[in-house]
Image (tube, rainbow, N blue to C red):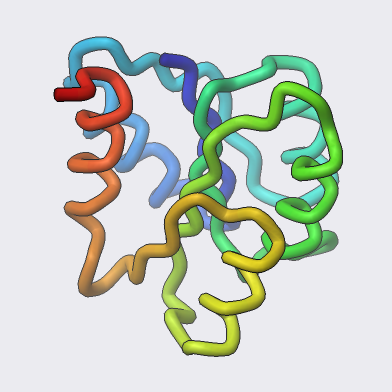
Length: 121
């Protein structure tokens, strides 16, 4: 399963990528740190899963989500943010996000979700 990570923190991307690389069946194929870069990367790499933050320079994560949801072959989108407010959750889910997790309280759910996607029971 090909994964692209989109977050404005390069350190967070590296740490998450390192953790994901230990998972069987997961390959992090790219990282982006701002919205327009993310859109280009997603279109170029055609990942199975995008892990997407909300707050970042340029096009924010919700804008990126709305644009990729209009493409064919839409990847699974996991919103992973420090802004877990109900209004953001609602807007992301309405825009097509498959999952919405809080970085501080639900981080492990990303791994559980990817495990389930790669090895459905």
